[in-house]
Amino acid sequence: MLKDITLGQYFPGNTPVHRMDPRMKILLTMGYIVILFVAKGILSYLPIMIWLITAVALSRIKPSVILRGVKPLIFVITLTAVLNMFYTPGTELVKIWVITITYQGVYTAFLMVLRIVMLITGTFLLTYTTSPIALTDGIERLMSPLKAIRVPVHELAMMMTIALRFIPTLIEEADKIMNAQKARGADFETGSIIRRAKALIPLLVPLFISAFRRADELAIAMECRCYRGGEGRTRLRQLNYGPVDVYALIFSVLLWGAAIACRSIAI
Image (cartoon, rainbow, N blue to C red; front, top):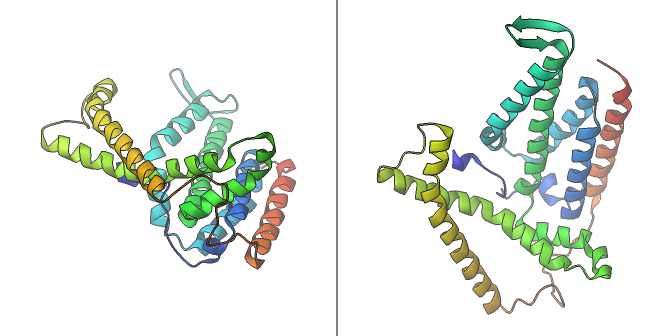
């Protein structure tokens, strides 16, 4: 189950999405999230779905990888759908004792599930196609205006990227610890939710120790390489916008404009 969490993983490639400037990918991802919450109705979601399907197809990320990333959040998605289905008033479809399912509830639940799945897929696609170094540089460049008010932009970008990068590493470490404890008779899969939560306590202690050890090793390695922050730092790869970034921006603006225009059309 833990290995199904693919957040923070990078899949190398030479696709148009991989070749895009990280700043443009970050900006388009932020715009995608905003448009996703602005959209209203099935018709309004269609242009956004076309944008997402096109991005996934161009990135050549396997659908199985994306589904694996959504799998750990099935409980949250199901809970959201159930709450919207049962607690949204409207035209009654089915009534069982005190439980009432309405047409508006089913419609709202479907839209919420669709929105969450599209949100997860779109945001995960950013880390799938962007290396940690490029992501750090992109975040730092976008936040560079904050240097005027003495915000430590480079340090913040570095911390965010390292935290994102170490998610797969910690998940792998947690899976190893869990398998080792299962071999010693530990049970993580049966019993009530409270019992399962208590069973995870012996897992968290060695995981935190391992995380602190890795952080200390990383700090020593960076210090040995004379890391002194962003001041005077040179970069092997300079960030430059290219034709693929312009095409992606035009394509995104057209489809997102269509999504906003479709908000007034009720279906």
